[in-house]
Amino acid sequence: MHVEVFNGEASGGVLFGSVMDSKPVSILSSKYGNEPKVEMQRWQESSKKSILFPHCFSMYNQHMGGVDLHDQHCNALMPTIRSKKWTWCLVLRLIQASLANATVDLKSSTTSRLCTDDS
Picture 1 (cartoon, rainbow, N blue to C red):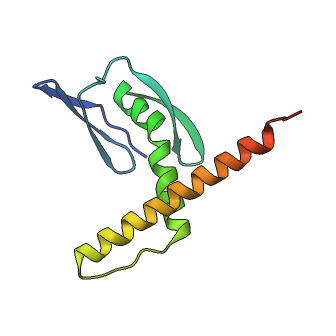
Picture 2: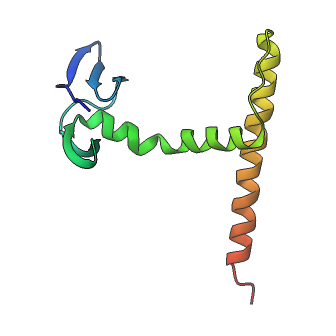
């Protein structure tokens, strides 16, 4: 794994940054910049190594979990269906997202009901 120096460029309040990790990674951010640098653990061959990454990458990793979890639930509920009609794909994706959100809400409500003590 090779990590290159962060390339940042700000114009009009939007910062563009890219890092060469195992693949090139680019981020556009209007809120977070590249300072302060944050240590992140990256795999290099068989061991983890601490590498300094810009602040915008750490904030992305911190807040990305919900989107990944939603995609994981969607993929578990219904397989991806390929179609030539974009409207059909859109309708199926909306149904898939609704089912995933309903499943998460149901699980959280039953968990909270089981944890409360009514006596």
